[in-house]
Amino acid sequence: MGQTVRVLFGGVEGTLTLPSLPEWGEHEKDPLHKPLLGPAAARTWKRGETPIYWGSPTSYPTGTATVDLALLEFSSEPENYDNAAQKIYETFGPWLKLFEDYVKLLTKQRTSNTISGGDGLGHLELLFDDGSRLKHISRRTPTTISIEMSSKDESLHLEQFSEAAQTASKGLLPRLHYRMLLEAYTARRNEDYRKAIIEAATALEACLTVRILEEFNAQGISFGEKLLQKFRMLGGRFELIRLLDISLPEKDYSTLIVNPRNDVIHRASFPDKKLANKIIAEVEELLNLFSPQLYENV
Image 1 (spheres, rainbow, N blue to C red):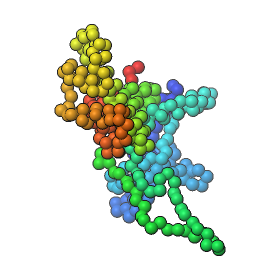
Image 2 (tube, one colour):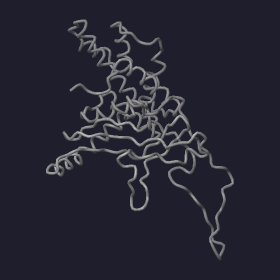
Image 3 (cartoon, rainbow, N blue to C red):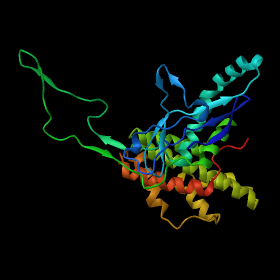
Image 4 (tube, rainbow, N blue to C red):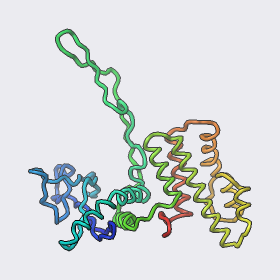
C-alpha cells in the first residue's frame, strides 16, 4: 500500500499512487473500520464536505486492503495542459482495461464468482394485504449464502502492480492464449462452466501450438505443417509435444483436460464449478510453464 509506479497515457508521463493503510495504534479495538489514507498530495481532499473514500483494510495487522480509488498525477506546461488532458482522456479507457487484465493474470483476482446462493440476482420480498395494511410474509426455510475463500495469496504485490501498470502503459496486449484464458475467467464468474472449460482448453491448445512451432524451428523441421495437420486438436497437440521430447509434468492430461473438454463439446455435458476450477488450474500451470511472458512481442 502507498506505492507509486510510473505510467504513460498517449505519450504523457505520470505516476499512479495507491492509498496507504490507516495509522493504526498498537492495540486497535476496531482496525478494519478505519478507512485507507489517500496519497499525500490528496490526503485532505473532499467531495463537498465529505472526505474522499479511498478504500478499506481487509485484514489486521497484515494490512491487506480493498482499494476503491488511486491517484494519477501528471506534470505539464500551462500552455500544453489541455492537449495533455485530452490525450489522457482518450487513452485511459484502453489502459485501464489492459491494467485490469494483467492484474487478473498475475494475481487471479476476480477470476471466479466467490459468493453463491441467496435469492439469485435480486432480493425477493413477499407481502400480503390484510385489508388494512401490507404485511411481510416470512420465509420458513433459511437462505443459504456460500462464500469461497481462496487459500492462495491473491493480493496485488508491488512487482505485480508495477508490471501491470507499465505493460498497460506500453499498450501491449496479452498473448492470444492469455486472452482466451481471460475469457475462461469471465465465463467462470458468470457461472457458465461449460464455456469456461472450452475457453481454457482452447487457450491451452493455442499455447501448445506456439511451443510446438518454436520446437520445429529449433530442430530445423521443415515438414512441421504436415505434423500439425496430423496431430490436430488438443489431444493431438499433447501427443506431438511428447513426440518432440518437450518436457511435460508427469500427469494424465487426457483424463484431466482432454476428455472433459471433449465431453463438453461433443456430448453437450454441463460440468460443475469444481471441474471447471480443476481444468483452469491445470491450464494455468501449463501456460505458465510454456509461456511465462504474458504479453505479445512488439
